[in-house]
Image (cartoon, rainbow, N blue to C red; front, side):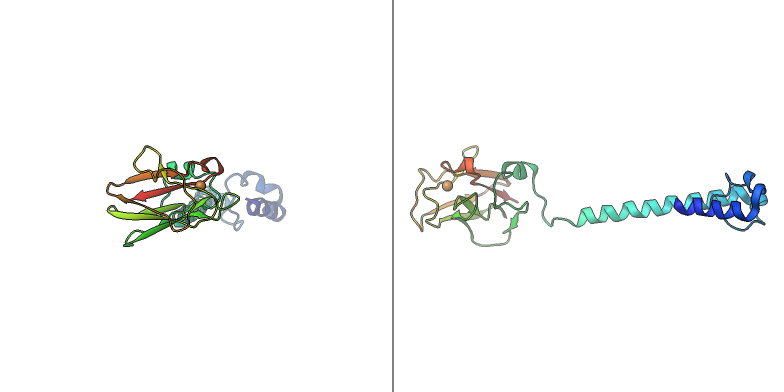
Length: 190
Ligand SMILES: [Cu+2]
């Protein structure tokens, strides 16, 4: 756009008072010879060129958006884990893995009050093992909606709890003593 005003200024300087009529039709600039004949034609050209530039800029922005994130994070997961400090907005893709383990009492939420990884994706039929680190006092694993429940919170290192996910869906779970601190997790079953 600043190019246009520069062009106009130069045009005015060059042709003087005679340019007044041509300004409206000749924003693209150009030689004085063609001004009277093809003012309309020049306007159409420069207008079209500018529109195309704008369009290609928009396309670049779109492709950048598409690149981000290899796995889509369901809204209910990002909402649920919004106050979980070790959730970085991504899901650890464990699909294709024969055995999947989640640490219970991992570092996070201002202590050892976290699951790691907090959000995982697995194939249906996968058995997930939660394994206690022994850190951060007592923990348990309780599904929202009651699909699984490890029972009373315990502290002992090496404690394990398993659940096999047969049905595809999004499963959210928490630790009863530390839910308010952000000790929550999610399993996305494909
Ligand atoms: Cu806990």
